[in-house]
Image (cartoon, rainbow, N blue to C red; front, side):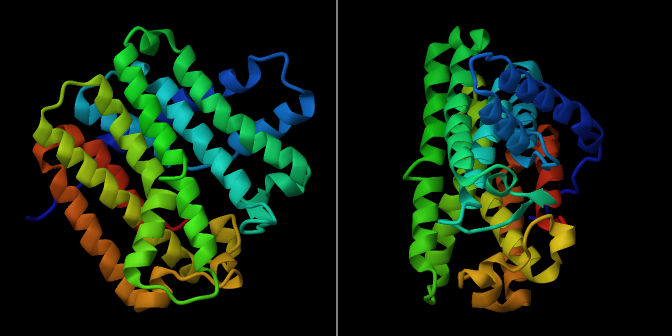
Length: 302
């Protein structure tokens, strides 16, 4: 089946969705007067930079596909971005990927210090779950909120992002199979993207066919995101990316280009992308936002 071209109308709504999540993030990061000043500054620095906000935008696009009002998803979008920001702060640490640049400026441990960066990451992760549980409209739907929290916690924990990072570290310095690499990518990057897409569905009434289709899409588009990340490391320079373009090579990591070659990695991304789009045909035009973001994920230059 040939995938339909994404509807440009979603591109026109991007600014509104970004404004929604940025305002929510500013509010939750500034509301607690008990937060120590330096810690608050590091948290704000880590979150309110020039990020693309892909994961929160996926929350809103999924909400459109599932028929959920954007206002009901502001806390969900903010929570997923807080978890993402925490993961970047910790990934950049000397004990992890040891990067000095993120989003075009010094990483948090360089702008502040290593201990403050660790604490800021810890605080952002905890704050994500506080934001969800403090939302009165979500709290009134306790069963749905419980499932949303479970999706985010699983994506962030040992079965998802943290487990994927552990496998990624274990794989440094040795050649691994494509299947092993896919497992690392699906966990380290893909599970949080999957959670961003599936959490809105918990506030909707989807039949089993649509729920399974959304899950299939979410799983595959997360892998496309990381394959494209691997390609950008060899295609772009540090200035364009806003982060080190040689981080994977410096850490002797296996990547899709190193395993399949650049053209092979591009073909694999195209294959998984096409499969992802086919999965959401069942949603018709309501999934045009997801199609728009999928094309951005596949073709992005940074």
